[in-house]
Image (cartoon, rainbow, N blue to C red; front, side, top):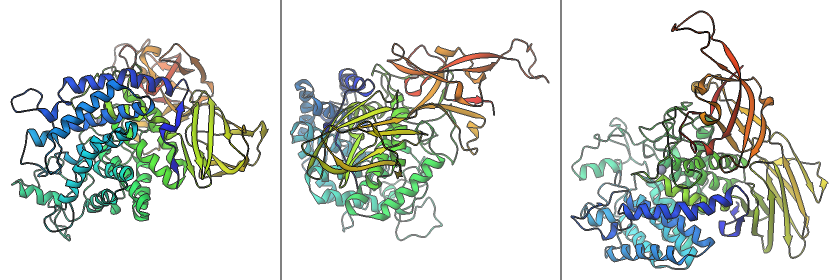
Length: 634
Ligand code: ZN
């Protein structure tokens, strides 16, 4: 078991993440506050009938995720103005909280009496979960506990309402989130009852038999069927047609395939991993491992984006990974980062860090513009030029989700364990951690992700024996390692980590150099949408070609059979400073074609130099075509 080094103990000083963290604080969070205020989200608890901006089911979660993200920024540096904004919202919530602790703006103000009547659709506990995460983050950043206390009262109300005892509901939320939040509340307060409620929700999920599958016998009826009938609705009259959409089609330990809505799946899996750690429950870990294997070998994009289909905002079929219609919700990639991070702490296996890095640098980061002011909801892998980021979305889950990830991104870099320290991600900065009682400071110097040279200097009060675990990424085909400039020859990896165990002294410096050539990525031949095509990767970054650099009709480009001709060049003035890949290709053309639709002679082709830019940076210039997968000579 690893313990993450919290983001408050890791300060990035690099040219990649540090500017993004500053932009997040200076641009993104103020924009999100302003829109949440203008749209009525921040006034939702004080809304009264007849006023504009009727609170929607999701709204409390949008406000909450902004508070959580802003709190991470406050943990870095306090800001009285932001704290006054959060305090005002908390006061509004507390003023309107019901005497029994219930706190949802929609069901207090718009639909009183309908509380907890439709757990399948109404998102009440989803909102509660985000508000709990916000309250914990704000308390940890500022020490102010009013919002935390209010959320404890709300959680206590849920403990009274939900459970196996007579008079309680054996229900659970249609949109998972409350489970992982209750575990955070348990960790923040030490109150075991919150962990127990999280376990109840996870254990109860998918029990019984659905009326939607009336032939299957079950121990008792599916909760969502029961509650539908209780509100005089036909359980079969459900747009999603089945409970796979919300991962309630079978008990969680029996689930072996990732299905349904991708964000719900990720939040559920986060809670399952957390519960496995807290309760030492290997059955949950094994379920997570099976679902991980299914996801990462059959249903994940090369960007770490997940969820191919827009209809269910989620998973479709094995190997169904179309590029132009890829849904790949930003929240789903963020959720994959969260889950991968938890699996990494449980196992110490680098395969989880590899996917965490892939989703972080590509699928998630593309969700926000370079200026921090516009957002993608869906993240396709090719575009005809009509896909643009927007300033906001009515269903605004994604903008504050990427904001909370960026505000806390340094927390994904290191862990500690009983025997040493672990570096999962590489970025220049300073970190403080402990091995047992021994404080260790790590200064990392690198230009990652643009360069594979990494130096870690250890600061110790006195010499100490421990292990330094360095992740060797899955994309890296060769590396060199030295300690105090003496090369190390024995470089056996353990679960993807290079383990350096010795007596360390103050000032010891480890130098790691990762090969970082331009590489082709090929898809499994079952991915028919990528057949005959390759994607360009360098280091952790996936690349794409854009019309801005290459002209239109990108689908006519054919790359050479090997990527050796691609050269990396850093362009400080381009897209906030990126390393581009340039190489020679050919492009089919129409010059000798004529007007026929079909003919027996192949079209002519001409030489074309192409320039690829990191995928996360696409759509930051004039609208135009984009492609990740490109045709290649076999
Ligand atoms: Zn979203």
